[in-house]
Image (cartoon, rainbow over all chains, first blue to last red; front, side):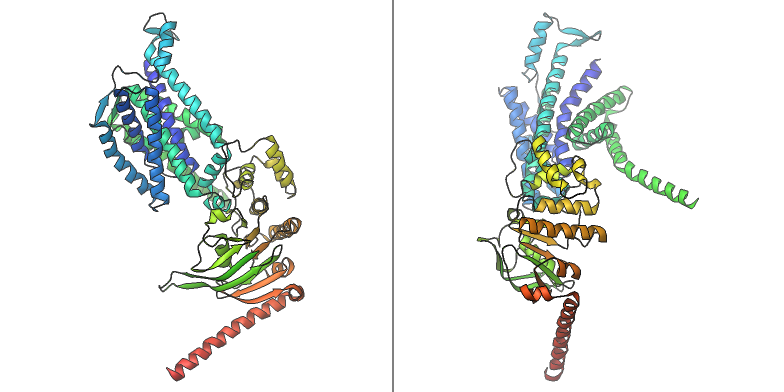
Length: 313
Length: 270
């Protein structure tokens, strides 16, 4: 049960990463590698701010804003200086590695016994459980702290998912989505496509950094290496989500990304439990994403071959 | 209304691929007129249209729409004044978005995009009413992705979108050339209808001599980046397809002669 709750919580926290990447990869169709750096940026900034006595809420907000700055810089590299999108992301990610080290002053900051954003439900649960440290959920004893983090994550994801949904359906959000779809049309409709790309990347990396902020508070540390491979994980989650619920409509896509991330984390938890070497995790994820990207092409060519054969017959 | 003055554009200057696409174009289009540009491939007719649309900046010359000097305006800034339909029927609409979402963008062409819900019931019924006029049954499919429609249907919607907010100037870039004959005829008819109903000022590039004779009230012929013929008013009314073809021949012959004369002079004197 603890395993499942843990996977669920991390899944929820990382679904903010997936929602952010949904904006860059799916809405404005920008292959943004800044993600690996901005999730660490969110985590390290939050850790340092909380350690220096900031409220965890303000620290998380600061992480979100810092992520927005990082994303818009990638956007400016791409739009203003005409650097290819992948290279722009790589430059920003590389720069962020040093920036994150600067922010933290060292490669790792532990966050033990500090306040987190889940303080409030923790108090509530504590009163409710009348002093017990564990309460039963479906018959299993679950630690109050784990439960309160889970509740906080659910609230965070629900609120942000809903706000994102409403945002994408506004005039501005519609223009943003069209930018990834048909740039020529967007310009002909009087929309500054460069502005849209910069804003889209800012919002995307803001959410990614927020995800990093919550992740640091949940796992109790920020580490300069923690962002490596996050982009591929997010992409895997989005692909799983699309396979689960499809992509007809904004609400469906957002729900899919959230469910996909949670399912992905559960699968990983189970695989690790069954003895998958944690060192192999990124390799397995990369192979999974490769398969998911290639599968539609393979299906198509099979389909064609089959059709040809049946035509000859 | 539209005043193009001494506009020149050279692509790839000072290379072997140098193309002098526009050579000092002067053209004034009257308010409420419908002008057609014809010419051979590479004559610069689409380039002229793109210069007005703002796809690139001219090397020299000015472009004015009404009182505004738009020579240095970007493409998206000009969208406030200009509606456009492209040759590629897929270029004017966003395939993955629904018909209603595409149109809602056109309802804000050149305006700001506020953080308010884009579509509500009243907007949708307004969209439905105007889409019904296309007589394609699309009013019942407003929530379908536009990518599921045919080229002709998408071009009809693009035309509707370009004119949803009345543009000061409508640019049509061979917008029926990529369609099957039946759809092309339907779009041509629709173009004429909308331009007359809304009393629009329009500039159209076409390959179709039939359209050039049938639709506009002025025909301009371009050749090698220059305007070589201009049929207006009474003259335009008398023009038939054979006249246009004759003019094409004459223009090409004149140029052949120019070249052979030049060659002779070089042979004799250099």
